[in-house]
Length: 237
Image 1 (tube, rainbow, N blue to C red):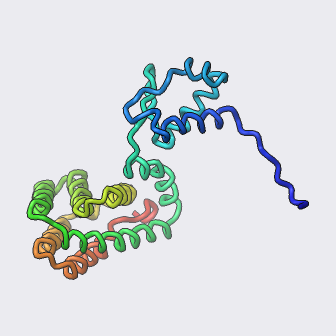
Image 2 (cartoon, one colour):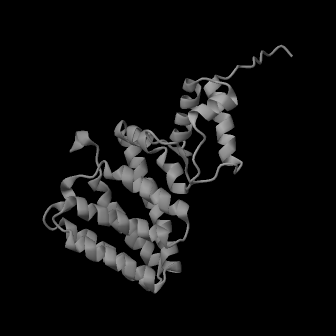
Image 3 (cartoon, rainbow, N blue to C red):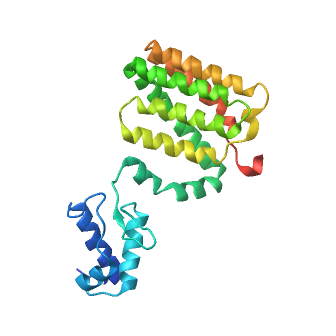
């Protein structure tokens, strides 16, 4: 075998990171526990403070620990939401640099939500339906207030995902809506525009309440196809 396969020596901070991560993933440190102090870790691993701090920052970037100034870092509970949140910054940068990527995200959202609303129609309890109606009532009261209206809009769609009982669906829904919010125009609050959103939301709730999955899917597609024009790159506004 002539192929070269050099062994690359890891940085000290990388080795510390691996060992600290193992403490968490093995269960030796549980969510809510304090991480050992910097001094303890320096003595335990026989390394300097910079290596410890770099490793801790890497753990923080992964959402495994929360670092607070003047306090010990705490181990976090990993959830679907916290994991997906780690890509927020990168996702927004990619979206802001490419119109095509934004259009792809709009299409992914429609594909995702048409499945979510069908599942909601099959699983929704009367309580679930009442929650959706309450959100639409809040949204109706928020007409003229763009921020509050859009916030209620996002909660409406996330609540539909929550009916599934699957926290990953909820996390994905919140992430996509958050990314799209960066590109929402003021078109939504033009006189007469809000009523279309409210009417479509009520139609979707009606289909869910009747457990009509096919009509719910069609209503959701119609709603999202109309509203997709509300999300544009800043250069197009």
